[in-house]
Image (cartoon, rainbow, N blue to C red; front, side):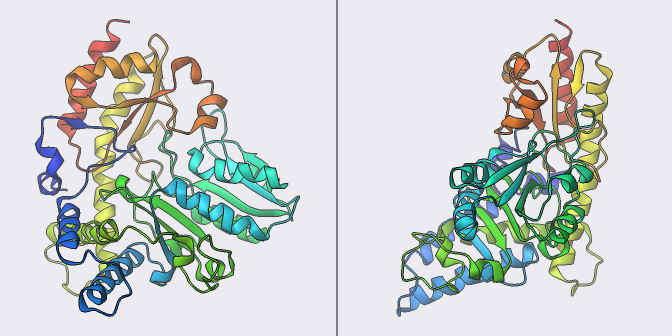
Length: 412
């Protein structure tokens, strides 16, 4: 992978700062910024009017939404709901989906998820929904399928699980989990926020019922998207005005409409992964399917990110007083380069604050994965230190961070 090609696409990387808090929010592509400006200059009107500018704006936004649908391999653009954040979209989903549930129905959540895909479901206990918690193994931090099978019952309505932990960095086998959940007659809702910046999302291949992630962690603007199967969306109660019909999808889940200029800017994200492929594989046939091009881009990115993660994980494993919280290897089939650890002699806050003067942005805390931090007894360290890398980071940046850690830990 040509990292210099990548870095030129992100204007913020021109400054003298190393961004390693990318799981909290990545930098935005310059092309997405340009599309925001283009929208405001040319199409900034309300949709649905008869005049030409409004009609053109509607066409432009439909095109952008179709590109998003293609990017995640949704069967159609009506299965794509735009919203301000993953947390908000999941809250909307929980309210809409649970409207038909009965007291005693069950939902399974995990103790590894960000609260976005937990609280919206656990709050349903107030209406008599029973919540069960699928807990990760204490030794290897993994969610075991057999534990899920023990929790499932005839009353299970939904399993909420993350595709990739925003602390552990570990990738869950969603396709396999989906098969188990569907065999039990339940639905599955997947939080893909920590996964989507690193791997290609294919909702049809995964077979999921609902899949949600945030674009501001996938090189775009502060916006999120929720995929849902059209038959489920149609049957569900919406949260918009009383006069909306069941088949008014996705609008019945978008009160006040969605953000037009930010949705339009998503063209910059989807097109980036196509252009990434064309640059790195110039000899490929020009008629290669766009989704295949994007999938090829993510494969190359995964390989590069494994090279980024390896030296940091190897260094951390070599420090006797450090414990890696999550998968200890850089294997791209098992994890993304979101790397968390604790040190027995330093609080996580101390390590991060001692790193700050070196113009490196890392972070400490629970990252809203509060159940994981509590269950693994990490509160005493003020949570974990998290280094979250993406493909615009460089080996040189990782080496600089390792040198900073060496200086800090030598004063233990």
